[in-house]
Structures are given as C-alpha cells and as structure tokens.
Length: 147
Image (cartoon, rainbow, N blue to C red):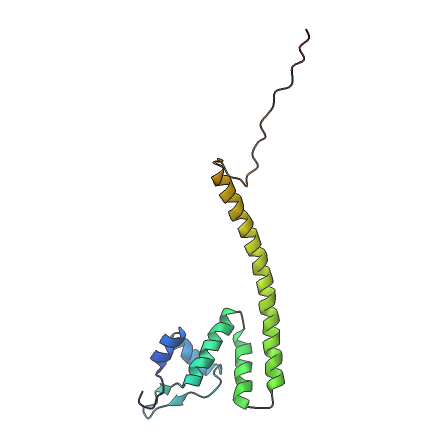
C-alpha cells in the first residue's frame, strides 16, 4: 500500500493468521487499535497492528482465552490509567503458563525415562518389550544328592 500500511493479505502472511481469523479478531474486539480503511474500504494495518497480532498469536498459543485477549485489547484501547488491571491480567496468565510448564516438565520426565530405558534395552541387544512384565526364568530346584 502506498502509505506504508499493510493489506489484510500481507498481515495474514506476516502473522500466520488467516484472513478469516483477522476479520474475526477485528469483529471480536481483539485488536488494540481500530483498523483503518483506505478510500475503497479495504483494511489497512499498521506496524503496531502487526506487532499486537503477533502478541495475540503467542497469547493464544500459551492458552490465553479470547475473552482475556479482548479485555486486554480493550484496556490498551482505553489508554493510560488502567495499567494495574493490565498487569493483573498478565500475571494471572503467567501463573497459568507456569502451571502448564510444570505439567509439561512432568510429562517430559516420563518420556525421557522411557526413551532412556528403550535406548538401554536396545543397546544391550535385549528382545521383547522392556515395559511388559517378563516371566521370570525358572531355576531348577537344587538336587539333594546323597552320596
């Protein structure tokens, strides 16, 4: 676009969001500023819009609900004076991410243990599934020979 703005297609390419999702985000009030329009009525996005949308992609990937993103966007649109509320929203989401990371670390520990076990099992040339209970070999009773 001549004035340095970006078309919806260009923003979709830069953010990884579909054109449909960008329109949905705008209708849902998830953008931190109003998207401008050119003389033909086409959306023109600023660098700030793209930066905000990149943040939204990360917020969503980390599990932030659209309602929370919408509230945060509303607070940003309202301007100064509500920074404490923005901070509390972000702190709450940080707590959520920290809990997620703890659960994922536990899962990773389990998978790492299984990988290690299989690697040792295969390196030793063992057969069978190392996680299945293998029957114990029977040992012959000692014979009581007299003599």
